[in-house]
Length: 101
Image 1 (tube, rainbow, N blue to C red):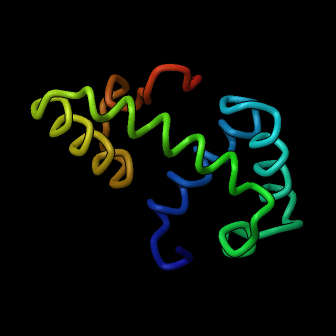
Image 2: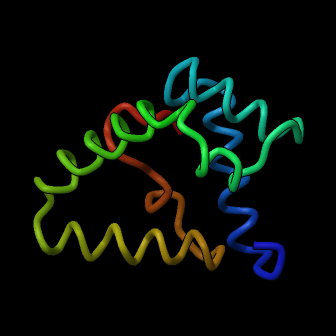
C-alpha cells in the first residue's frame, strides 16, 4: 500500500470512519489501534480477535449487495473505483445501509 497513495488514503478514510464508531465499538477499537500504530492491517488479518466482526460485516454486505440490480452493482463498482482513484462524486461515497458517512 505504501506504493499506492490513493489506495492508502481511501483505506485511511475508512479506518477513520470506523474509529468514529461507524461499525460499532469493537471495530472502533480496532481502528483506533491501527491509527495509533499499535497494530497493522497484516496483524489484524492474521489474527482471530476481530474475525467475528469481519464475518458479520461480510454477511451484512453480501445480503445488501445481493439485492442490487445489475445497474446498481455496476454503479457501485464504478463509484468504488473512482473513490480509490480519488475522482468520485460525493454521491458515490455512500455505503450500504447502516454505514455512517
